[in-house]
Image (tube, rainbow, N blue to C red):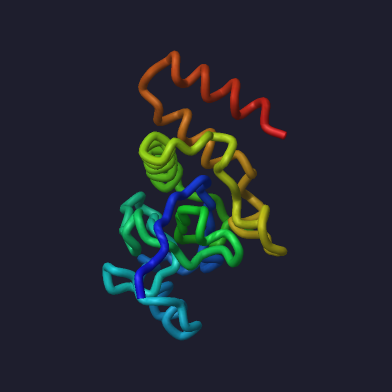
Length: 164
């Protein structure tokens, strides 16, 4: 069976809701396997395309060109980025925020995704995800902070601040 072509129009970011201090990727892989998530072309069950550990290290769980399994009803349109941590009771690390911003920048450019189309998981589901301590615009702001061009930074800020 041929998988439908994946043309993402948005980015959705998440947290694991686990305060465990070690690397969490393998735990998430086991959890998603138990829940019956589909195996990715990279051999993982993790539903996110990218996973960012506390130290900022990013793991590709799914090919950017394959449909994810991170947000019911949105997987056909959205790239999923998961971050280790429970942001109801803690904050993302500076390293995580930097990686999140860098990857959002790359993905926005690669897929022509607007900064206005980066969302927290809670926009699409009744959940706190990515945590009460994370504002909706965190990923967009992080992307702007990682942008090198001052002109592009200004353009992105204007777009982000016009957000509904």
